[in-house]
Image (cartoon, rainbow, N blue to C red; front, side, top):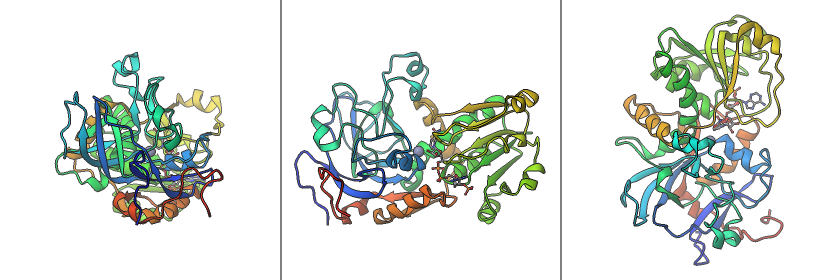
Length: 383
Ligand code: NAP
Ligand code: ZN
């Protein structure tokens, strides 16, 4: 059973020590609760493909060890003296951001995700003046929700609506808001779902969420584009159409069908061959955080007035709006709760492109059953 060995280290975490992205249990230090901070005991954390990108070097992070995780659900254990929104014992969530400047135009507009000084829940350098005393213990960056506790400014903490299960609430704070935000822009804010058809490329953690949100927005149909037939039964259980897009003929049958496509694929792929499924004037929204540039012909865009856009999670006000939308429409993601010792298996499945059409959620209480590795080992943990 894992116990904490050092007073400055006050939490257990599951993280990677190098780009092999193998997860080990180690100890980290969480900062003292500042006047505006909320300290949270984490109960569950969803596993997002971004966690793999961060750990396996896809995004160029090279400060180790790093504990990922930004789909956090837990209970408040302490609050700073100026905290007004939260009480001890309350159920709360934390998503992909833990800090921003709060002064720039983006922050003023509730688009904190685009603030130049936005601090991500993991993998961002500590904000100036914060965490300086923690560098030895934690590395020079934030650590995420694959851990037993976290301390976060109340601005970036969310109320979990009454009746929403903690097991899946965290999923909404990344997979939920990332798919809600572009759907809201293209569906809700453009007169609602009536008469509109949505397609989702990639049926993983984001894909399953997008189906549920689009359906709740009242669209005429939702179609999943997946590489093979493997996930067809699950798509029909969720009441959506299905195209195995590696079969070129099935894509041809869907030319000029959709108003908006959300592309959630986590690896480089040929978007030029998928784009013709859009109606003239349709939008192709890239959500997958793929580092390699895509190849696309200007002619395809010009002759069809296609728009290609990206979308990054969502700001604080929109995230709360999304949580309330999910509570109102009783949206429950497809998910599985797993033991911390199964996290490596899910990491590998995601990195190999073999994730199932659901989200794995780590039961954080099971972290204490893992062997603790010394985070100061120079060459990473013993194998
Ligand atoms: P996931 O559960 O692993 O799902 C990704 C899906 O992509 C897979 O289920 C698979 O779908 C498809 N795929 C995987 N490898 C592929 C390959 N080599 N070629 C073609 N298709 C492949 O991942 P996720 O958690 O949903 O995240 C998806 C992406 O969104 C990641 O890149 C993640 O970092 C990013 N993300 C972005 C934001 C944002 O703000 N923009 C937020 C969160 C996550 P099929 O089996 O159905 O083909
Ligand atoms: Zn994520």
